[in-house]
Amino acid sequence: MKTFNNQFQLSKQNVLVLVLLEPLASCLSVSALLE
Image (cartoon, rainbow, N blue to C red; front, side):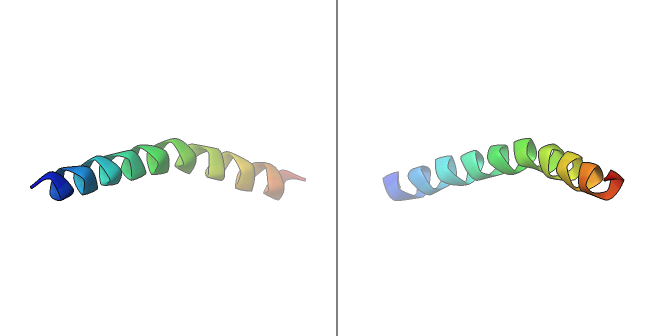
């Protein structure tokens, strides 16, 4: 059960990182297109 909980924590962190990086990545691609 403990290992499952650790994996769950990890996946939550991954989702958080993805949510934070998604707008950043789109901002970078937009600025790359504008140049």
